[in-house]
Image 1 (tube, helix red, strand yellow):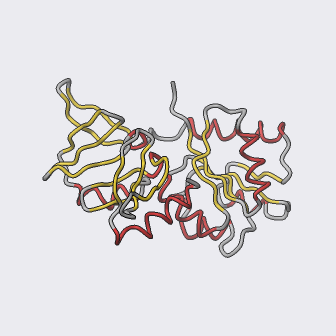
Image 2 (cartoon, helix red, strand yellow):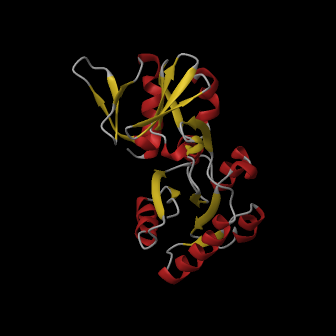
Amino acid sequence: MAPERRVLVADDEPSARRGVRQLLAAYPGYAVVGECRDGAEVLAALDTLSPDLVFLDIQMPGLDGFDVIQRRTPARMPAVVFLTAYDQYALRAFEAAAVDYLMKPVSEARFAATMQRVGRMLASAPPPPGLVVTTARGQIIVELREIDWIEAAGNYARLWVGDRDHLLRESLGALDQRMAAHGFLRAHRRALIRLGAIHQLIADDDGQLVALLATGIRIPISRRRRAAFASAVRARGV
């Protein structure tokens, strides 16, 4: 079974975001991993959530949809479907390499046509990024989207996928910056967490911020990383 495609929905109107979610519910191969209200949130979410597809409103407070692409650069953007209430941006949208251009409100038939275009484009995309680890059965690729968190283990890093772990011959420090581009944030000096694996942020009895993962694992967040970490999780909509 092919992995679900990760979708980011960016629109300053809650009703528009809700409409995309409702339309997308008919496509089980896609999962909304975050919502954004403005361009600044979109730029942050692209780094933390690594979506495959973004429904991007053109007119948003602050940075608009075109500003987002310009700052991010087209080469680093996922597949983009523009959303707008106006038709005068269509040419510019396709010049920005958008997959499609949807006028609001969007009909089911028009959305279906868009998803066909999206599917054809994503089918030709490269495989999702992963890390090569050595096991008793030989080398395997662990997809980054499967990893819940990464733990320091001396000069190695331990990749946790549910209750299974894999040892990678690379230090956590060496991984830190590279993994940030794929939605991982440093929780403290010995742990990186994939934001998509977080169920919620909670405070323990001592007031310490703790990331509760979907697997039930609890990972404390250091005080100096607390504000940035909480902001990234909020951008994801947790």
